[in-house]
Length: 116
Image 1 (tube, rainbow, N blue to C red):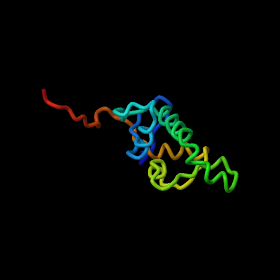
Image 2: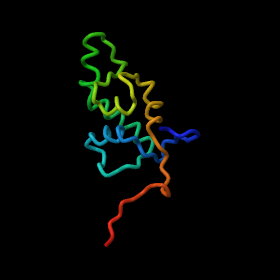
Image 3: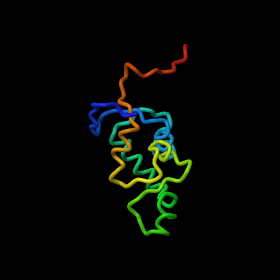
């Protein structure tokens, strides 16, 4: 989904994939109507989602192996659907996020406006 040649500055604006957006919207700090995010916010919201769900994402695997470096995504988790992965490490996260972002271009966004 990521476009070739995009500069991922922390202030650049992007539209996340629907599954990534679904994960963001589970967080109480995210405006549910917002669809355009800075790259920095996308990264922080992914980290916040992981920390908010840490017991579900780390506990079962940690109990068996003691591995806290690997995040295991259960079936049905929005990040699992977005990243198309069952597990990943914190090192993988920036690259995975970048695959789920489309650079925001105000001239290409359709806005549903009601006529007065």
